[in-house]
Length: 238
Ligand code: DX5
Ligand code: ZN
Image (cartoon, rainbow, N blue to C red; front, side, top):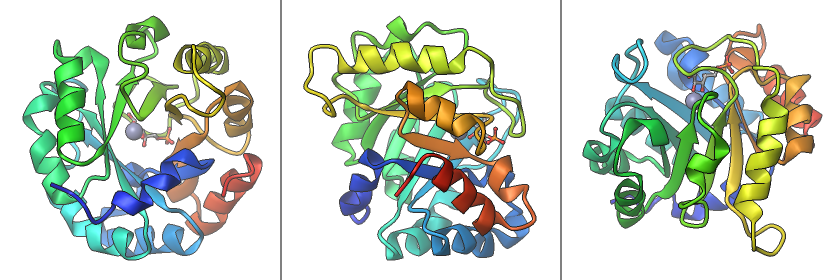
C-alpha cells in the first residue's frame, strides 16, 4: 500500500499542470522529470498502455517505482493513467510501486465500482477516465465516489495530437455532472488530457477543468521548464 505520497494529494485539488512523461526522453528520464519539478510541477502524469486497450505498449510499475523517490522527495505525486484492459488486476502493483492516484478507463472494465473501491483500499486517489466517444453520463453513477474524472480531449494512445474541437463544451457538461447536488468546490477534480498547450488549456479552464496534462507541449519543447511555466501561467496554475 502506498502511504508516502498521501500528503501530496492536496496538489490534485489545486489548479495544476501535470507533465506527461510519455513525451520525455526516456534515456534522460530522471533529468527531464527534475527539470519540470524544479520549474514547480508537483503532479507527474504517467501513461500506461498495454497494446490491447490502445495499440501502443508503454511503461509499467517499474518506471513508477524508479520515479517515486525523486517525485515524493519534493512532496509531489505520481498520477498514473492506466490505458489497459482489466485494470483491476494491476491496481495493487501500481500502488505498491508508488502511484498516488490511479485512473482507469470506464471502457476498459465491466467492474468500475469494484475497481474504484480497490484503488481506494490501496491508499491511492481514485480516477476514472473516458474516451472522446464516451458520453459524460457514463460516469453518473460513480461521480461522487471518485476523486478525479479524466476527460480525454484526444483519442488515447499517442502524444502530439490536436485537441478535439468540442472538448471544452464536453468538459462543461462533465463539470456540471460532477458538481450535481454538491456545494461549490466539493465535486471531483476534473483533469483534461491531450492536445493541451497555452492556447487550449485556458479554454478547458474556463469550462471547469483544473488539472491539465501536457506531454509534447512540455517535453517536445527545447526548454521543458519554460514550456511548463508557459502553460501554468496560461491557467493561473499554482
Ligand atoms: C495519450 C496520453 C496523454 C499524452 C498527451 O493517450 O494519455 O497523457 O501524453 O500528450 P499530448 O500532451 O502531447 O497531447
Ligand atoms: Zn494520459
